[in-house]
Image (cartoon, rainbow, N blue to C red; front, top):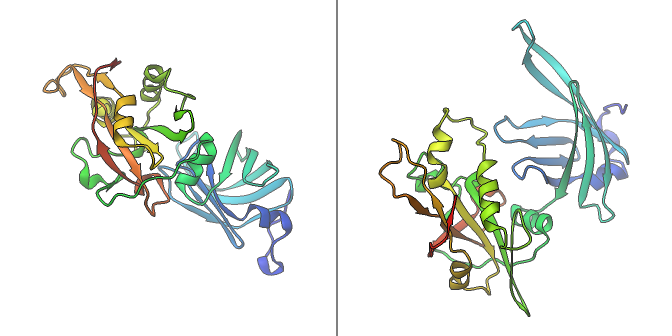
Length: 282
């Protein structure tokens, strides 16, 4: 095990390689920020954690104070000792690790990233330049929400990517390499939505179809009309006493993501564009 030392001696070469901002590949809302004198962890639904850390070329070690309830219902404070065995990619922008703590072990991976958009380009292997448009709204802003408080929450936004090429427009989703499986992709995405704030039972399901929207990351060379034409999407509306005032089918809202200074999923900008709804996806 490594020993946590004072930082007066400076960083070693392995620690310098790790210093920077990273985002989990498995969970885009979880970020790791390695600084010379601290590590800051930001995970959804949890308080930010700040601690000291040390590393060599194969292991990272740090400790986190942890509060929990034991099997007898007694509150306990402990120190969660964390050891990560890891490898870096050749260009040192990807980390593949196995994390062991006081209770469990799991594998995870990180991407070094300057911003959320940079992360998406690396994760999904597609390049695009977002358009400028002053008419956009911040996609994580609840001030524009009219349904359940989470109308534009990023967890309800299914991501689609478009770039121009000599052969035409290349399109992929966050789950597939093209639009051939769009119906299945949307179903799978809906089935896996889980809000980390744990809303009251039934609330998430009640508003799911209304909250669901497409977030299109399209190159600035692609006009809105092309996006609209390629995404002719409608969903079936479940009937119950809470949403009986809606029609049986509901067009999915499409938001084109715009260039902005936002570096997190909740502070990027977008604008709603026209929807042509002639295909029903359950």
